[in-house]
Length: 242
Image 1 (tube, rainbow, N blue to C red):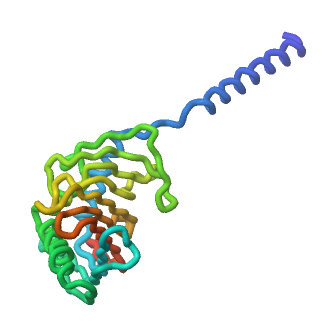
Image 2: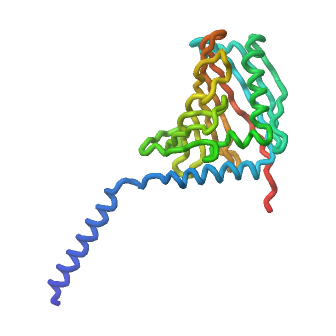
Image 3: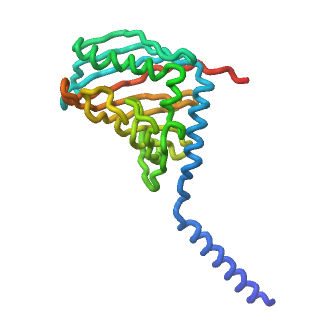
């Protein structure tokens, strides 16, 4: 083969390679794998339970009436302590506003949280394939707190006031939980209508912990009511590495 023939062959090979690279670049980004995400959620929930021996934090509650979400009608701040094997306990640090709202709205919330976190109950509220039917929402994405998130439709397998039927947003890079939003699968009270709920999460020492929650409901006694919770100053006690 002469020099010109060799050069022509090289040019043809280079052109073919360039076309192949362009074709690869034009392919759509690989879709997230639903089964892999669900396996990660299952494993992360178990790892959190196995390794978080306890934690403490401050929870700040506020209740708003009607469409005014600037001036709370009642507030409460509590010191929360969780111990694996025994559950949650609370110490009220401060409270203000309507005593009536404190009694019928906030104190029942604390009692419900105690019940949910009793050993044997706490596992039932994990975001796992045991407790929820989960389906990836292809192409549904959102940026939350600077994190690229993908969406899973989640439906509780057992109806409960603390179980949300809606959308679970997970980090597109590490599959950790970022936010849950939807409606309570069971009304928390015979007086309450549909309860819309939202909770956001962050990673603390490698484990997913709640940072903010919001619930909106309407009932015959109070009308439209909004309850918000901020979870602050976590202190985690982790199992010692073996």
